Length: 147
Image: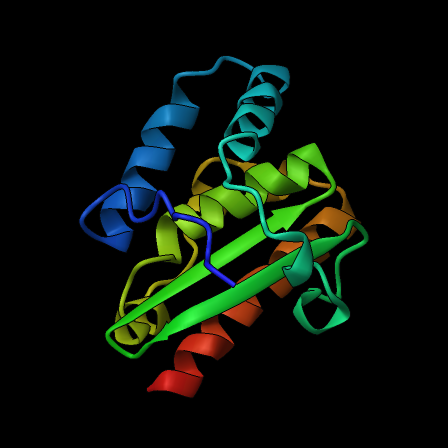
């Protein structure tokens, strides 16, 4: 099965990606605009082959259905992921923008500061916050496995 073509990384480093996310979200005046932007970002995720939407690739800890498939090695890890929820797909897009296409060492050394910096933590439901934490934990565990 061929992996979908990943648009990531968009920026040269995880730190640059987080700075770009901060700048983009600062542009919006209120959270209804930010949620709409998040939904629009989620629509940019490449589709996942139906054959990958299995329990083996399902991210547990999310209320929504989320599938994530890692590939690569210590020098470059790519993550392919999608959700059946529009907002969760946007959260996935942001996480992949920061972490996908980076080395395991860079992933392990990068905290997800963008979440607090853009005020996301205060505006997510507890179930979405738990799901985002599960997604980030999966990405970091995959990086640790390759170090």
